[in-house]
Amino acid sequence: MTVDVIIVGQGIAGSLLAHELEKRGKTFVIYDKGHMSSSTAVSSGLINPITGRNYVKSWMIDDFLPVAITIYQEISSKIDTNFVGNKPVIRGIHTPKDENQWHSRLAMDGYGEYISEDYDGPEYDDYLREIFQWGSVKQSCNIHTQDLLSGLRAHYAAIGVLREEPFLYEDIVMSTSALSYQGIVTEHIVFCDGAQVVNNPYFNWLPFRPAKGEVVIVRIPGFPDSHIVKHHKFLVPLGDDIFWIGSTYEWEFKDGSPSAAKRDELVGFLERYLRVSYEVIDHRAAVRPSTKYRRPFVGEHPEHERLLIFNGLGTKGISIGPYWAEYLCGLLYDGVHIHSELPKIAN
Image 1: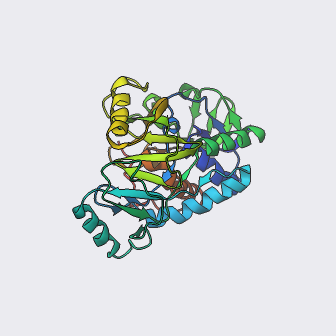
Image 2 (image 1 turned 135 degrees about the vertical axis):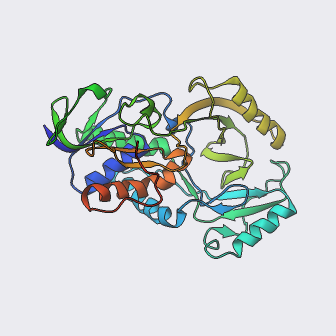
Image 3 (image 1 turned 180 degrees about the horizontal axis):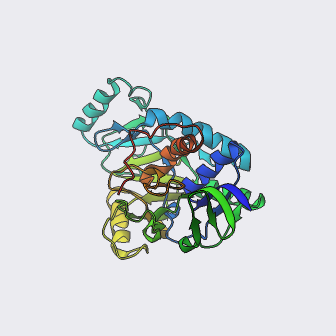
């Protein structure tokens, strides 16, 4: 058997890369056993152009956003599933100083398409404490990540390219003219193995900085669900009075399991800011494949050019993944140059 590409991992990176290869008519197989600590377990799927306490534009959002919208529309049509949520983000503005900062951003070039001083959503005074004002984030939404990935997994299984088994690094056979794995001859192997990169002998030396995240899923009867609310943490409506609350960040951790300490942190947030009763119905944890540079690794191994990595999308993988999947295909087939915004992959 001969294919153009072997993809290792079917998380966000591997799924988006497979979609781009399929568009180009390239042949591929995907190896994905599935991991309980996959970062999709805690992903809210947010596309949020404005970030941080100072209300700055997300890195390269002007480039990322149009590609993401187009790609997710393509995938939605392909798998016949609408996984794109239409609920925009509103941000709690907590002090007059914050309000001035919001308005100053609005006056800056390039911010008007993402920030609005107009808010026409529901009133939250009966539900939340310590809100001074609201700001609306335009062109924001959320992707139902589980629906996206499960739909693509079913699609790849149906067309016979998904191998639900572990990938064994020791079975890679390389020569100057060929690359193969367990009898499959290929031009390239692309590792999209997420946090499992720590077990990858070809790329585990890169400066990854895995971050553990935890969320709770809660039922809040009657809480308005027309918007995604950012009030210190995010409250993302999932339907039927169910909300995703999070996320925490932890860089020093023993394992990827939910912890009592972070559950207490999230429940403490609810106790402080919610005026109404709630019920915690789930507590989830996962390890995000973040990097030291907070930017992904996308490109060739410094010594084995047929081996590539597409990893480290971090907390904004839903927003930035489509762009970098397109870029990686351009790197493989169109002769595009190494992107100046990416960290170098070098020993």
